[in-house]
Image 1 (spheres, rainbow, N blue to C red):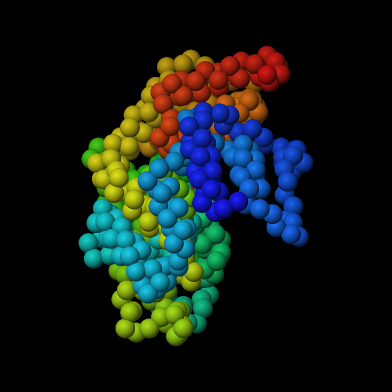
Image 2 (cartoon, protein in one colour):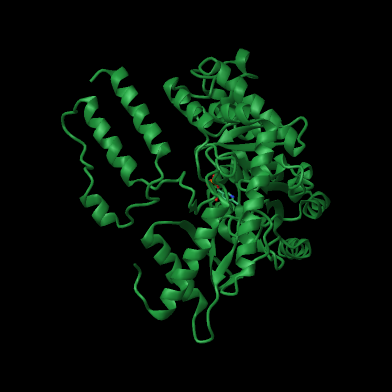
Length: 467
Ligand SMILES: Cc1ncc(COP(=O)(O)O)c(C=O)c1O
């Protein structure tokens, strides 16, 4: 088959996939999926036409993350301009390390980072696109380590003397970072939260004082703007005051909540972010840019350059005369995808006002879901809502175990395959946590979700098997 005929056919399949309103998820059982799928890597290859069959099979069996009932992770849907960016980036396959190999892409990435820096209030800052919020958190902690222990890059560190502080509800990537950076999990101090899941400044002060008394040196506070489960925003102004007083680096994990900055109404959730030292912000979450697309932003770009200076000796790649243009000098990666183009196209199409409208619309939908929950006597809201996370559960009767009941409801939802939402915990309680991060979600899909949760709850209570 000729490559142009093949591509025409691929495009038809893409358009059909986008137009279909089919099943959200068709299979969850790995054994039966493996049995019904051809996973062999052949000795001899076949014609491009056989790939069309593979594509059909894949599209039929994948989870339809652009389906209006997909509300499970902190991302969903599809931005078409970004899809075009992804295709063109792959078509023109390059690596972002040097200007020589990625001339316009480097300027595009820089322009995006400058705009995002402007939005967080880092007027002379800069940054890099990374592989995700997890890596952004690690870069933040690495910069903090370098500030706190300037010789650590060369000599290594004895992490046991250092301490890092996060909210008890922070993302697990903070622990991953402490592991990778030699700080150690025991030196990640979980600071207590208030009833709404926000880090308590008074508890942070207590923990800092306790660490100092025990001979540790506080080097970094990681605040979260939009926690994974509850969507809580830590109080950045208060936390920054504590950090400045104690000369501690403040990194803000805004992987999930960063997009609030587009909205005039909701930007206040991150009030004080300009007082931080670094921020990570995932465009592949609420902004709906296809994974992966994530920014790490820093006020003092020279520190990022320092912690990423290993490539200076790479004479085969970096040359003095292009130093200021080569983005590879600001990254821990060597080969790096062009993730900027899809965000660029999406931003050009939407503009700031389009993103703002999207954020406000998502918040309105989340408010609608919240009121459906609050108004229904069979449901209970399990945390106050700050962002688009709505944490709730089906109410248990006296003799019932609410966590078991809601685990069963989630299982039934997954088996039926009409809706996808997350099962999480708040303290000991199992809760249901849909999020709004998918442009396909509508008031009707939320009403359908609530009706289905209640129906499964009633069936589970009566021991009626799943349909
Ligand atoms: C608050 C928070 N931070 C960081 C991350 C990690 O982001 P990524 O998946 O882009 O590595 C997540 C992921 O859900 C998150 O919720």
